[in-house]
Image 1 (tube, rainbow, N blue to C red):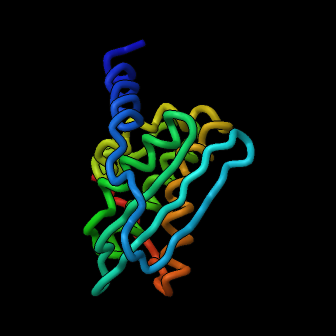
Image 2 (cartoon, rainbow, N blue to C red; image 1 turned 180 degrees about the vertical axis):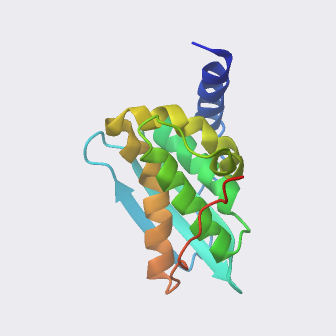
Length: 158
């Protein structure tokens, strides 16, 4: 395993242990409960939106380190972000997860910050759903709150 793979693996392990944003959200605008029936991962995510920004995200979940770490990373990326940024990040993460390990533009990896650690996960189709679980819950909770994400433009390649 090369040094970058070790670093990425450590980022995932750290986020799965120290789950950022974990805990039910007080007075959410909407919640979403999502389950990955393939492996049993699950999350209940609440969101509050104000003035075109995600004001707060809270979640409770159970599952593999990939699903729980991905939700933690997603929380860090979207908490406080405007909806256009959230849409771009969601599209970038989706692109990364469907890259099948072939790589994505460095601009996408930079935009995703710790989310870039999931690049290796994209090589394993059965784990992609684990990594996308939180993003599905976020999109569903936003839709339930009456907020639609704008069409996303992915990170610009340099």
